[in-house]
Image (cartoon, rainbow over all chains, first blue to last red; front, top):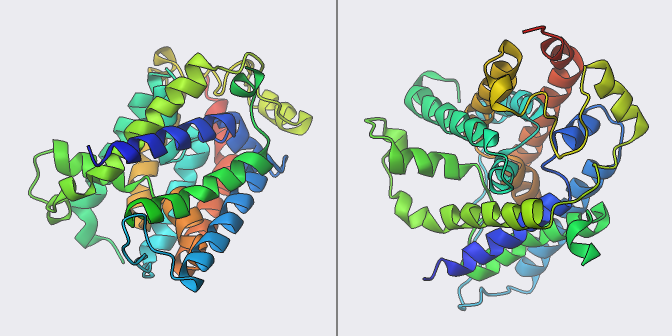
Length: 136
Length: 188
């Protein structure tokens, strides 16, 4: 069960998402209406800690727990970052959830969110079959 | 036991979310990201000829295990350690949402939208089904979501991730300010 550790990390992440209330439709509305610092505080702190962590890993050439060199694939620009990003933004405000929170919400017993998740899977599927026809 | 049922402040949870980045990197050279799992689910479950789904999804099974964990975390924190109080929203936010017809603030999401009954209305269909479709289509087209771009990509100072994150917010703000109020007021 080499994947067991990833289940454990996922459990931690799920608990944090709920305790941060970033899975709340209300909180997402509050964010997009610029009515509270709560979501911005979460996202900014996460990015700052992420930037410092990645910088430290690179600076001190920190190895993984199994001794490998840490490698991070760079992101390449595509028009999808803009068009797809905008589309996702629309969906984020409608459902009040990005993909991580969808899984946490289903887990919390909101079975209706499984419908949203299935619809998201369908969205990814439709993207996959029409990918070559879209501008990238 | 209060710490389990009470929400945690953003200056605690924000850094903890950020720590997912080094934790996954150091545990197995894995890049933090959730939306790829929607693609893995397609590759694993839907028979298709599309090239996009022909890859070794099993080599990414760690990520499926990760989101399986996220759901268990949701069960623990959202069900067993459920916050007995409503989300502490600002008065301004509550007043704006009241205007859109939201009445029930007791849970994490409004009951008016998140119910199987609402799913049969145009409003519920648009918000849950069309909204969900946009999340799945948009994240894959953009090459990532809030985790993969806004947090992982930005942590690694990637310009495409900054652009994507700005577009996430652009889409969200336009939907919230100019479209959502009309969808919420649909009488059916």
